[in-house]
Image (cartoon, rainbow, N blue to C red; front, side, top):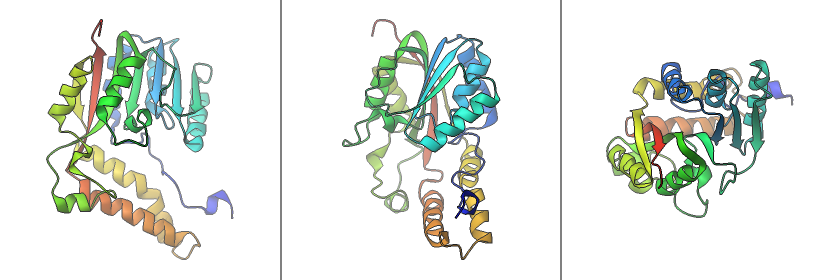
Length: 256
């Protein structure tokens, strides 16, 4: 069985999250305006946003941390294509307790779990304190973090990921308040639109759905259908219009 016979993994997504080109451009522009010399991307995947920041800030260098070798290889390929291979390093290692800071800018989009002890419940307070440790005075943190648009019903929770609880996320207000308590000022607060969610969720499975339609009897079709159907159901029957993603641009308070 060759690689071309296998079901696609992520399709042709540009970003591994509900992030549009327009919003990404605005985030990059705000970061570029403060000319960070060093950038750290936590749970970077293939590092698309990291690469765009480096393209916008001549001479800046970056490090992307992730544990997925396939995504990291894609990031290295993209960096080479864009002439950035000498300015960025994609490293296969855990970000838990990382010593790769402090830096001028930290990106952490939908990857807060990489900063948390996997044996403990997810805690955005831990994430924010770690990000505060990793950023230099005068620097910037861009955090993409889940929040409840409204309190989910028991039925909605049952349709989400296994073991989903109302306590898994905060509301947007409490999340921003927690950022302030953790030593930041929120310079910019925004959240993913429904269109961004739909582009991401559909794009995430698009190529795999096409593969399943054309290869229904493939030896891997049954397990692929089960996985993809579960993912789609979790979104459509669970967290759609309930779970939001906040993009917070945070500035550390001097002396905290």
